Amino acid sequence: MVNVAKYTAITFAPVQGFIEKSRKLRDLYGASLILSYLSQQLVKEAEKTTTVISPAIPNLQKGMPNRILIKGEFSKSQVEKTVLSAWKRMLQECRWWIEAKLPDYTYHWEREWTNWGNHAWEIFWGEGDSIQAAMDNLETRKLSRGWTAVNWIGESSSLTGTDGIAFPGLGATTRNPKFLIYHSEQEEIKEFYTKLARKLDNCPPDKEPEGKYIAPNEKLSIPELVKRLITLPEIVDLINKASPNNQPLEKLKRFHEIERKQTDTTPGQWTGWFMADGDKVGDYLKKLADGNNTDQEIQKFSDAIRHWGEQFSENFPKNLGRVVYAGGDDFLGIIYSENSVEPIKPLEAFEWLMTLNNQWKEHQQPINLSVGFVWVAGSVPQRDVLQHCREAEKVAKSLGRNRVTIRVVFNSGQYVQWTCPWDYLHILNKYQDREKQSNWSHIYQDLAHLESRRTFKIENKNEAYTVQKSAIEFFDIYFPGEGKKLLEDKNNKLAQHLVGFNEKDDEIDRAKATIDWITDLIEVGWHLCSNT
Image (tube, rainbow, N blue to C red; front, side, top):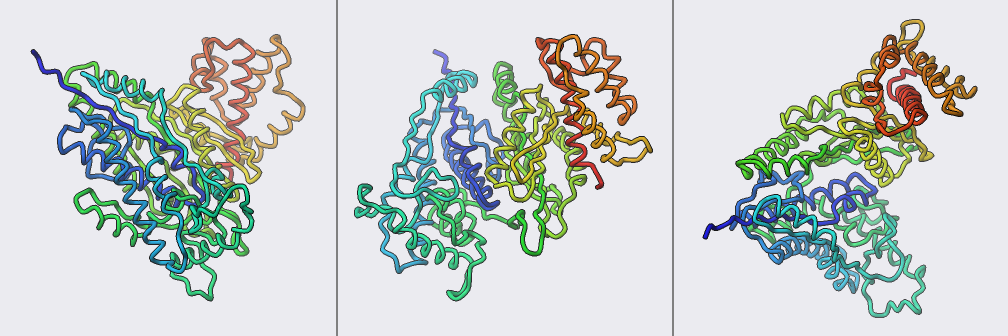
């Protein structure tokens, strides 16, 4: 009887939600450190008895993907034990550190920390006699979710509003929801977070803490608190000391919080956020799984992508911002200035964005990239910024992939956006006004005037071609020759490539999509490329 090799596919959740529940840049890094660490613990444990096919470069913790493919048998109970033991170790050391640093409280919260240790993560596991079978089995099992929510009483955290506030009296038996007056606990909570903020900032009792780790007016849940504390080197040392036989948790290096909001001395800082994802990676892996030398080909792919992510993080210009995580085919980064008095100019951010796709191609794998790039005003909450990034990335995917959606978000929450294939992004550099200069105010003002007269408004099918032609001719005035290409595009192939409309769309929808693409280009170009 032939012995057929077993394959195991593993992942866990929530990942994106865990990252996006953030107010500070420190939250993003803390979440990324935790996720990467948990994934690496899985990989290291699996390596003891099996062969890990993906992810490659297991010693590189930063950006470690949470989808793991193994040649061999690795049971779901082993996965749960590995993930939960590493997670519980983090929780335990964070809780003990707080209790040791603030010993004057009587703590009733051990049960709540235990609940979060048991119920924070949902494990997904699949197996099969081939890589494809294991991956399919994983996806099937993901349809049946078994996550358990952590119950709580009282007021919710000020960050997400979905979980209970972590404070010494959280689990007290005297907190009967029938008689609990929530506002009566406010002073106790405020005092606790003020003392904790002072301790983290090494701040004397007679001074207000800066809030480097926690602001005194914050009220965080247990996992939110852990994401902050995990960025403290002292706590990382305690975690690593408690787990000497495992891969150590890396410390956060070169951290600088972004000063985005307006202050008495500085204006609000505009920043650029980019969220990216490789196109159809799952389909490509399935293709590799159906071929010869399956294990080696997938390992080679994973190694190339992971190596690229490592180099991308290392080589990102330090004066331009930071990469939060780069797991390979998905990454998140921020363009900002550490000196808010001298913010990064929008044109400088766009010029860097122009280089991103060529940087991506350096891994030499047949995978394209879709990106959501958000240029955002300083008063927009960070969790909203991340949601804008996610939405912009989805738009880029939905309009044909291999493109970037640029979204400019204002303090009001309103935004303008434009989606463009990578091979045509340079169009913004071809702008020139009637004086052969690059004053974007001219085209912006002309567009506003034409739109006020409803020049580009299509009322019925008979007007579609004429109105679209007028918009393209207007476009050609300021982008010489580019409009002509669209007018000569008899089969709509170029327009379809640029705009991303569906072949099944009717004439009116195509015309409207083309006009919107031109006007959106002007709106975004004016905000990113204008010198005024």
